[in-house]
Image (tube, rainbow, N blue to C red; front, side, top):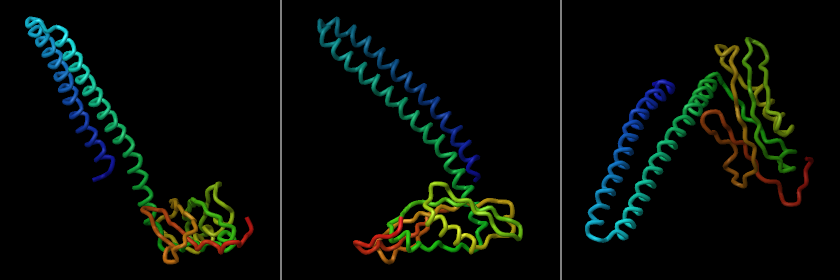
Length: 207
């Protein structure tokens, strides 16, 4: 099922459930208030007015707290549904663009970046060109050493000819990790983690 169709159906279901919950909240609050009033008359007849007022106040407070919690719960549910839609759409688009990748070379952690303990994230957008060199645009916040490594790897990669005119977004996370077995890992749908061993203590590299 398409995510937008699923979201539309979910929203219709939630609106119906919310309307029913509203009716139940009003009925519950009104019923509690009526019971409180009738109970007050019975208590007044028995000569325990002060006790009845205390009980009525506690009961009204409990009903008000329950009503407020019910409203807050429905608001949080609506917020979650609204937030899920663009997130699901973004993941679908990223997953679709990854199908354009025929062979992706992984960047090599630059030796100078490792020596200088440079870490960071590089986001690259690849424009697939018809039979020509691909165009790579990297994020402005990435370190120059890491950005150069990403561009070199992407230019050595290949992309589907049927994706001419489309863009592929790739996210590379560079970090230092003392685990020698962890060098490259993948995160759905378009994230990659590139790791290197930390430099020996006392080794100073170029910034």
